[in-house]
Image 1 (tube, rainbow, N blue to C red):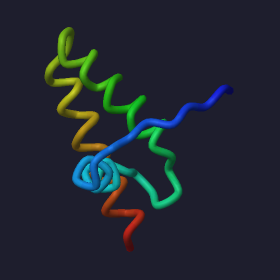
Image 2: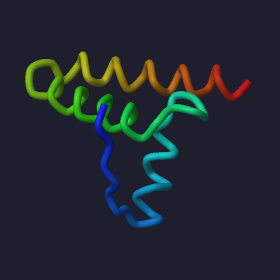
Image 3: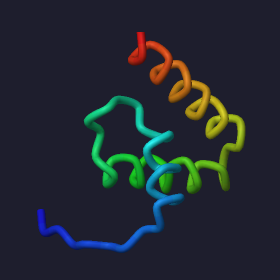
Image 4: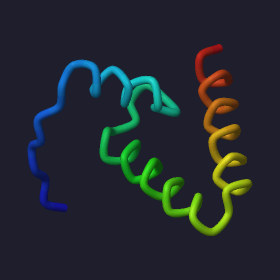
Length: 64
């Protein structure tokens, strides 16, 4: 996979960090998931909400 560099503000990086499911998850994985959820919102808002709840649950389990 080809990679590129993008500039982010510190605030944006911190927001992405809070969206990680686990510590070593890449920003690419985080952004892919966010974009997938945004697309899901168009067709199934409840499905998108369920995905977000699942992410919160996974984060809590990973932090134990």
